[in-house]
Image (cartoon, rainbow, N blue to C red; front, side, top):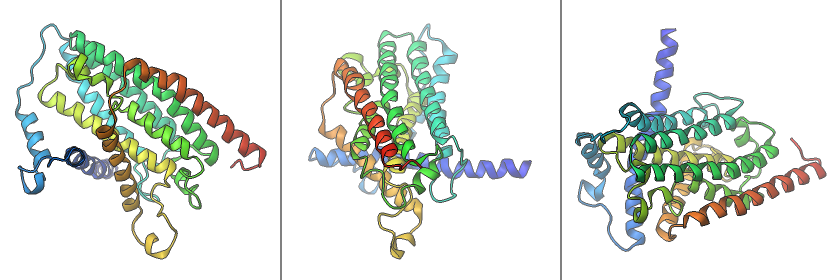
Length: 328
């Protein structure tokens, strides 16, 4: 029993520690890439090429004094960031990094991910409500409405992919793409999925909850020090998670682009990492290139554009598979 607990702990740490390092350096990468897109340097003072900047930022947040707003619900106020961060970590349990390299190879991998991402909404609501601030509450309401709206189209896109595979297991989804990645025949779905991911993770151009002009800073306006840091880590961990999910569902996960010896010799985790970095770059590029949506436009896009489109694709793909007898 003790041995099992120890091995489980080691496995969890081998996922969590690199993830936290990746989150730290994703913030640096974002600032660097956005800097070069806006013809400036980005962070370059702390360490060589600004390489120690994330550590300095983390340390700064760590030593700051946590300020508790008066009349706020202290227990919920302090619990919300932990909840958000914890859920961002838990969702990684079913992600396969290579063939057989997965913490828990659930047959219900996709519903598990969906359940966890739905729970993420609670952290946001609790944070907004317990802060006892109108700005935070309004930010939380917007954020919740946005996440719930785009989860519908995400679900329908996932259904389309599942129709092509016939399994809810993430490893099976990757292995089904041995001959052709789903990103090629289902390219419009990949675009829809990626844009829905942007909205789901509250990233630009859908970062409405954090619209500085009207809401100060969204649901985490009252947070400082470690509470703010945990929200920050949760947001970036979710970004990386969604990028990995895009890679697994549409770009063949750990599979190499071409099945030749030179490529198959390289470990699968490397290919998954490369594809993830590509999607993360798209995240940053979108933020640098596009202005923020208005709130009504955001909702209209979710319900009147994405929902009918993804529904149409489900019907089209299902019809095609049934007609040509290609169902798995």
